[in-house]
Length: 461
Image (cartoon, rainbow, N blue to C red; front, side):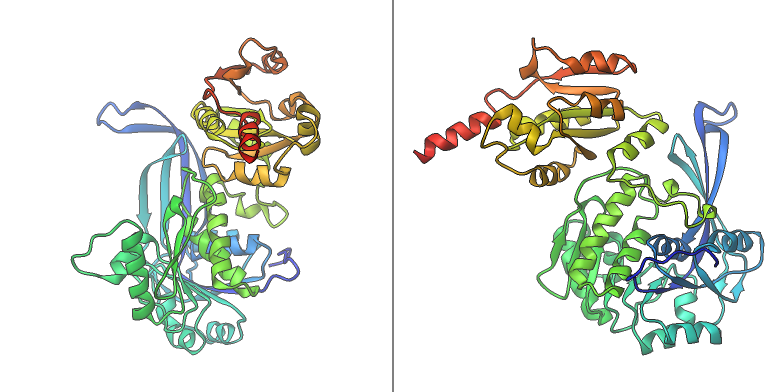
């Protein structure tokens, strides 16, 4: 446990649940096997990471918390590997395990899953005095129940002091009454609610399921996670929809664990349930955008390896380029975001694997547009741009043109609106230095911030 880092002010957390050992075998698939119509995945690189409740604990520890994990683990090869991965990060209290530690192996070709192999059916057999004592003295508890016995073994102690968060699994039991927040996924919530004859899917179904679970489980609140749509928070009626800040279609493996770890941590720090769910939705969205559990820094690297800053456009472009993706950039003032802007940015995003918007600072806009501009401050313009699903990151430049910023980002494609047709584009020459290409996209005629302001002024008169 030496070297574990805690951020001052962040409450410690005890995680109870079922640990797994996750393995990714990542290679390339360029042909089918001669003896069967299946892809041949070659040159596989192997990577191990904590899974299940161990991933939840690991993520909470990477947030800078002191984390104790109570879980079933044996001394076999998989158990030994998991202990080694967790040692720099998490205090481990082992429960006796019947059978071998469960393992999940994903085979991926170009980062897309081809098949998953599961082995090991070990279950937590019993509680220990050490585990009971740790729970009774804990300030904050998160249950990550994967249905393999850990939560059941300690259910009596958990019922004495209900946990802050219970992340359920269809094979596990119900959360103990009084749990502050339960976090099922949409399909899990519908299965738990068991409303015969009522169709699943959609916000109406999720709201009904959540209300039923608040009542049946006697939980303070239920947050049904909806993937790219965010989460639906219910206290029993009038649910609150917390939308995702952006839509990302990356690897969602581990997103539920990221959600639960963030929500529990924020509640432990004193946040309200609504604030915790909002923070958890944002964290899970960022987690998926960064590549999910498969893109986490190696656990064995220890606490000195900080997680990637997914808000940093330079980190984003470096990651996409490392994955042989195409980086697209577009630029402008975006003072009054209108349909022309949105159409341009949506079209730009379809040209590659990420879109970075380069936006002029307030001083730069003022020099270009004159006094009275921008109408919206830089902070407001950046916030609106980041809210667009097609925008992956926003970068700011203070000069009149973005050449210096482009030199840092080195995009493969630089996009401008068609209203620049026939004008000089100094960025085009710059992109040629690294093999990039500047392109013009059709611009929605009749839409510009200047024209909108003129019409607004005319209407005011």
